Length: 324
Image 1: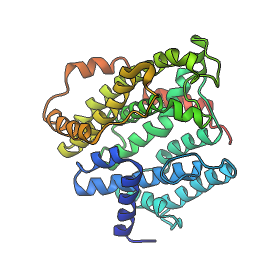
Image 2 (image 1 turned 90 degrees about the horizontal axis):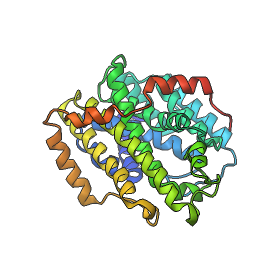
Image 3 (image 1 turned 45 degrees about the vertical axis):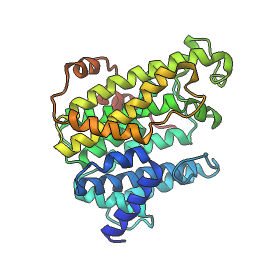
């Protein structure tokens, strides 16, 4: 197994290539936390790429062999938690950060179940299904990130808030990427939502449905805002530099949702991005917010959440994981 410095360097390269927004926010952490965040990110990115046959995102690859690739992800993850070499730097990185922080195989398994949903070409039927998907692919990652930052695995409320940040991120991403997902023959908008507005499944991005889809995207963005507010409450319990980084990330991803909501029917004419200048502004703004108490508006906004981490865990357990 490679030494720590080699794994950290590879993880740093992965986050710089795979997520410029997250890389910018991670720079605000103290060195130890920053490196651990990179190590966890490397595993998440590698799992995603293996399942979708990609290299740090981009166009989806072949679905041939996805069942075997999913099994490989589970096997290598189990090796990582057992402290054994996996033959893959990203999985060895997970094993390293797990030993340093107390991450568990159960936490990682919740994330892998999200990859299984994608591998099975799963589409949410209800809002609860949508939020269950967001839990697996992002909320569960938020929980792991919180533990990496030193939050106790027994601190349920703070872990709930960390989950909410992941949920907010994923809702923003889904609303932004509706056209890209449609091109890849994926749709994460609940079938019940489409039916409410008489949008036939598979036709959601056709021009005649653009206005209706803008309404659904705005609905998703409002949900993201509620979870972002909850996450900001949790961030208030972190160490100063960690709080700064999380608030910066929340602001950057929150702007994606706010911009999609503002653009309305033109939200998918071009990809919604946050410029480097705006990222720097959010980093500065987050620094000020980190010094102040959580505003009352956040508490009020968080009250609009309709799905909690415990709800989603129970729902996911009841539904089971589909086979690819």
